[in-house]
Length: 411
Image: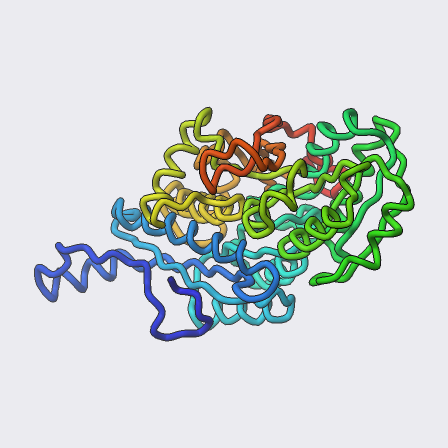
């Protein structure tokens, strides 16, 4: 797997056509007519989100492999250039600039943090390079960060928190405490929950903030327990989610309080185990168990299993797959790789790569899509991959997004 930054020996995902060996002249003509489509892919291969990032890369590589195996578009094959942004906005900007100026990529897909995706977007906007973000963010849809070449394949916090709130708040009581990672992701999730909670008369008892990468939550748990909430919302991600769920379980919070989280990560559930996450409820963009009801999920899962020794794709892995599939389909539809024409084709795209119908809203290029509400299970699992019960699939609906006017954009 090509994951080492600036490694000149990285494996390239290009399948050479056997017919090009017919002769030097024919080879040269074919190469001239079918330049490689280079896609930059910055993501945090190191740090607390590394497990999710590795799945993004695996699924993105699968999408490129499928494109190349099908012959690309008019002989144009694709190459995925992966860079480690180290979960650092400055590093993300540097790696993105390098991909554009040194490696001459035509397209950028990636990111796994609200902060890094905004720094990547700042670079791509300035240089008029198309960027399809696969990480949650509300800000990237707003007027100051939106643009003609900016697309958002992932759910955003408003959509995710709203879906979970609409399912959970009527069922588990009105008093809520938030344990929040103190950066854009956590803050935007709290805002989404509180906004959705107004319809149910929800009462916020406290919003307790912690730094990104916190290992020990023991200082927070007595205060949470003393507040006696009906619901504890873990607004954090990756290792933070694993650690806080484990420690809240060990502390006995579940005896009196329902624990929910906006994004119940497949990778976090696998890392944390059944006991830590037992009964925890949350949202997700994808769960492989949808294959029983959605044909495209079955196709995607089977391809991933075949490529990766029977493993199933994660939620953020699926975003890596869809982010690549969408931009390559837009290249084909546009019959071009320049940002203006590809962006126009991407804005028109109606697609179903892995979870049912999706499309990009015109004003902010947000992918309108389903949100899946799941609950972790500890009993009756068929195998190690069978970790969630699907409670609800909230259908794609533009009404669940903030309005274009609210974002500062024209509809």
